Structure formats: C-alpha cells, structure tokens
Length: 180
Image 1 (tube, rainbow, N blue to C red):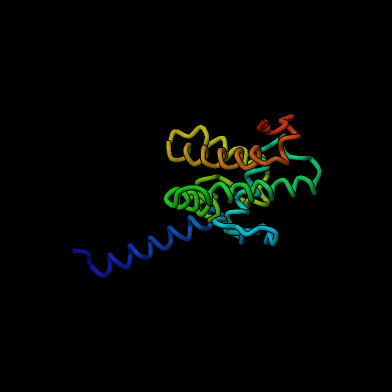
Image 2 (image 1 turned 45 degrees about the vertical axis):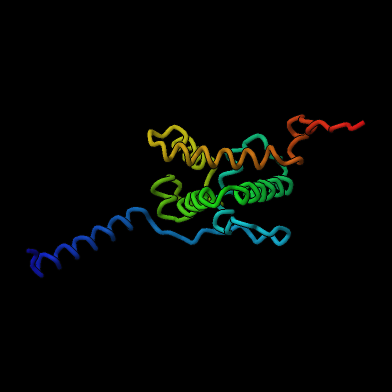
C-alpha cells in the first residue's frame, strides 16, 4: 500500500517533471487567427481551423498560387472556403475526424510536439511547414500518413476545383453539354 509520504513525493516529482517539460518547449503565445470572413458563412471550420489552413495551404500549393500579395490572400481565402464546402459535404463521422485533426494541429502543444512547428501557423516559416508535411507524408505511422493525405486532398480539391484557378493551369473548364 502506498503511504502518504510516497504519494506526496510522487506528486511533487510529477509536478516538477511537468514544469521541466513545459519550460523545455518555451513560451506559448496565443495563435493569431484568420480575420473573420463576413462574405462567407462557414459551416464547419472554426477560426483556429482556418488559421491552420492559412498556414499550410500556401506551402502545399507552392507555385500554384498567385505571387501578388492581394491576389494571393484572396486565393488562400478561396481555398479555405473550398475546404469548408468540401468538409460540410462529408458524412458526420468524417467531419468529426477532420475537426479532430484541425484541433490537434491548432493546439500549441500538439502543434509543437506532433507537427514540429514551433511558431503559430500564420507566423511559421514555409520551411518548417514543409518539413512538417514531409514528416507526416513519409511517417512510419499510418495515422500521420492518412492525416497528411486528408489535408492534401482537401486543399488540392479546394484549389483545383475552383474555377478561378483553372486559367493558371490552362484548364478551359468542363465541356459544355450541347442539347439539340
């Protein structure tokens, strides 16, 4: 049976360990959030989810997005809106899994420990986001590989499914059906 003295020692040791681990990972600041988008009613994505996407999408779509600052920002907003539309059309169980993925990536501790990205998503360097994506894509854990695949498919579908992106890739759009 555990004595009171052993219980107190274990509690103090555990607390000291938590403090040491917390100190090792440095200060956590609140993540800046993507500004509200009054022109669109988001069905499933929260502000934190949109911030994750705003940090990840430009790296995943490197070379595909416009270079101009204002056009680029508009394109990223369109990608985020497209992801929201795509996720809202998924079954509720899959929506919950996507929400859990964004919650995991949006929480500073798990962002740092699992993704290896120390800065908030909107402040993270393209290199750190790229390394995170490569680690998850090539991970030996199927769960991380499938999380990468989900992010990749959602972002790519949102961008390349958007008619505004078609001109940049030389796609004239779907053929029109001629009825006679």
